[in-house]
Length: 306
Ligand SMILES: [Zn+2]
Image (cartoon, rainbow, N blue to C red):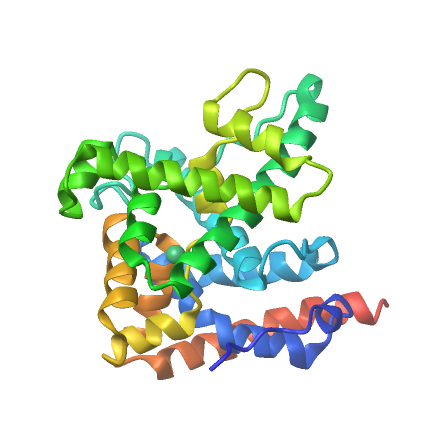
């Protein structure tokens, strides 16, 4: 039940068939992602079109530390922000498109990527540290998932990703008391340190991790941001499909509901929307057919210079 993944080498050679397959596989979830923020149906299609063209243009810089879906969602999210910004500029004073959805304001979506030139080097170090931290977190999530420890997983996600307080976390998961939450957090951090030691003989990650966890001086590695951007706890799409079909046991099922509804993972939400769409898979096919013309045009301009 493993999910289809495109061949990046083929994509980098601007292969028509591979790119059309990408559109066919990912169009539905991108449309679902944009649909949560943009009401205008034509604008949604334009944004998704733009995202696919951006993906073609940027494919040579694809970073294998991330999945292709992350790459695509990242571009789509930026295009959505651009659209909302333009719209906000045009209709200054009027409520923007997403204003009726609590917690989905432009500010929530906006990513601050201003980088003053003086701190570029430190930025590089922070990026390396963030990436290593994401690997560790992902390993921890995988291990915890395999051990069927879904309450532990939810507690740590609540603390690390959603920024819940111990008190709320304890009550939500009906734990003994606040110290039970502190204990879970303590053991998770200890396990992360052990994992860091196992994986990183040169000990490059530990100081960075400690700095991140203790919010020490110099480094600003945001654990919450790392968790969310790295999508360290996002299950593969087939888990969401199984949850919808009712074929999932309580543990992973509860985790998925928590991850999507309470933590508010926008990417898994888009996959869920896409998978649970009943009426309009034909509609998505029609969108794919319309988009592919522009994509092919761009691909041919890349491979057949006139
Ligand atoms: Zn997710």
